[in-house]
Image 1 (cartoon, rainbow, N blue to C red):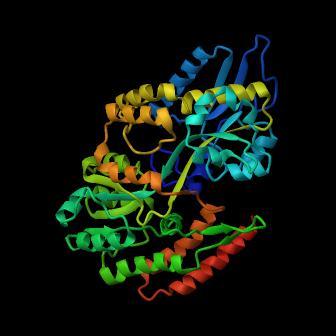
Image 2: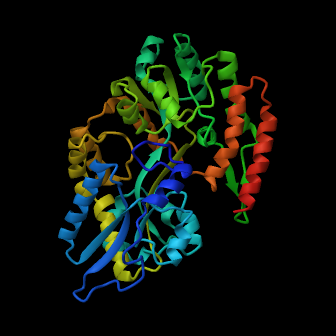
Image 3: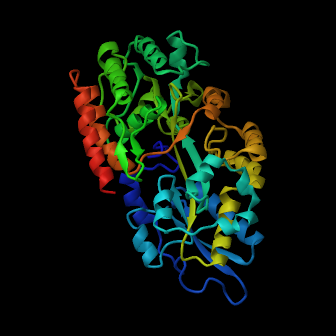
Length: 456
């Protein structure tokens, strides 16, 4: 689950499993099947990630980029498909020759695909695309095996921070330029915000539809803990029935029942906290940066009222995103052509300025601290373009952006969605039952997660 950010690549299996199956269009030429090169030397490649017709602005941008790419590369023809890779149909599409030549995956997917030899090794071709070296090494590593061979290219990223209401901070006598950086400070600030009354909630959290387990995981990471740990033999076991897991649930229990800073309404899921923030009734919650323009656009909030701070305690932050891998049945010509497209569209430092200008003109958010896959000169170019074309209050996100280099990025656990569903129960009971037995909740959840991981 990648932060449930509206308008971006949210890892919501309950939705993805349905929409991706509907959106993916069957390949006319079939990834890796049929002739890869025509008599005149033209290489045809199928790619996915084209926005649906229900997103006309980004679909138009995508198709403009296809035309620009084909003009620059007259011997490559791009056949775009909607949607991304659906894990439930992936193997069938691969076996049936219907998988695209380049296909979008989430950061939780590459390790499994590499282990099963279900993606092409693109290492021999990387030297032809030097811009790859300006992508953050930790993102490139997601697509590498233990030997350092590369099987994919990053496209975007996100990490969790603390979205907060600057207006409520001022009303509560808090400094909106200095959001809390520890969980103790979150608790103290939440009490002051809730004391404003009139239905204002100091801190909000999830406990339904896999969102509770997702946030529990983020809170474990922030304290330096984990949810699942790989064993020496390569297997995985639950790793939250411990002091860190108890600290996560104990703090939420005490904020809910002792402080009264989390409000009476619980069993919240993704949109609930955005709606509460948009209505001016919520002080803080964990989220990704792109929640802020969504709150403004969909829930009638004022973007100037919202800030973004670092993940509390800062010992780790749940990170995600996605990129492109390549059909193992691709010919070398198809791999190089598909890589050329991905590099042009998604990893192209020369188009950073143009992309920011175009997005701003299309009233898409420009200036959010993430996604940002770049280092070096490309990172400098992005910062300059964001400053020039920003249409969001960039200064409000400075606490988050300044903290990023010092906080380790931690990916989701294996079988993330199933684990999150199990952990929903612990979150829900702590927030709805004053006498919840935290030790028993964690022990029971740990046993269930161990069974899930043993079955993978």
